[in-house]
Image (cartoon, rainbow, N blue to C red; front, side, top):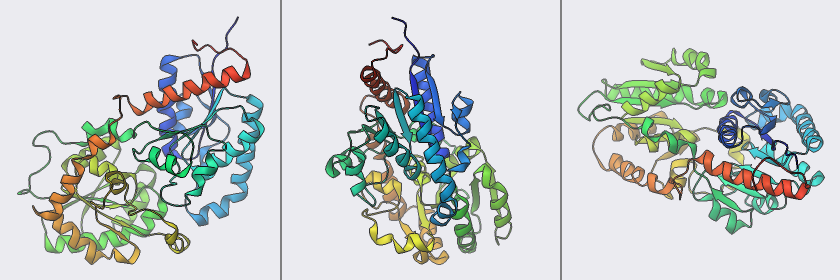
Length: 397
């Protein structure tokens, strides 16, 4: 019997999912070069050969206000994506992150193609809020591939879909994050302090001013501090403009290699909440985390069901990293906390002790990379989908 290439639909909704999707499809292609991919893709996945239905920017919208403003277009893109997948009938559908968009696609596809396996790469934060989503997901998601080690237990407790910890992509970068002997200046040298105001425009707008004032207060107490701000490329001009108004000098660095080099030299960091906190923890850089949210999100804080908004704390299972939300994170408070981290003492040692546990917590059971483990699961469901459709694939059974 003649076999045809495996067909996989991939749907992402923002740049972080695009990175994961590109790594996943490259791993699958390394095993099965003939595999055909299609769906909704960003720049990296497009470069790897995925024909995207439309530009990712049409749905990559952050913040309540921005989503509401673009809602008609987003709904239209959801319908377009669903219609395309139903017509093409892939062997498996993989949705990646961005639950507002991708979960809507998955639910609608499942209604029209009930036998199509659907795999969710990156669990929605059901452990943080709206826990009932987990049980609802079990109706249309066949498997969740989790980036955080505590998520499988959460889905089991909440009645969610089967869930496997495949590993966080940051664990593959650990050695690049950590300094070679002598690369990180000692406590007797001029300290490098990282300033990380976020990777989204809304975060930068809210945090650059208070972070600048925090830097001024730090420099007032410790004039030898060197401030380094790793800026994401798409926000460089905005960050440069706002940093120019700061009363202290800050060195802007752009690009992944420059950012990693800055992490390796840093003594402490002031950061927005987000994945960067886990990155800093893996780099063993003590930090203070601050976050300011828009008014609607602030009114919904009571819905949160977690002990922390800091990803590093959630993985560690305690509040190792100090965090300050909204007005609690005044420049005076943030400066005081950072100054404590620049010297040997209980605050610095407590964080470094917590970070030392991360490797064991985040390691995958068999030592595979996240993309390798994810590819195993996706290909297994593709085989099941092929068997259900009765159409032979080119994957050896």
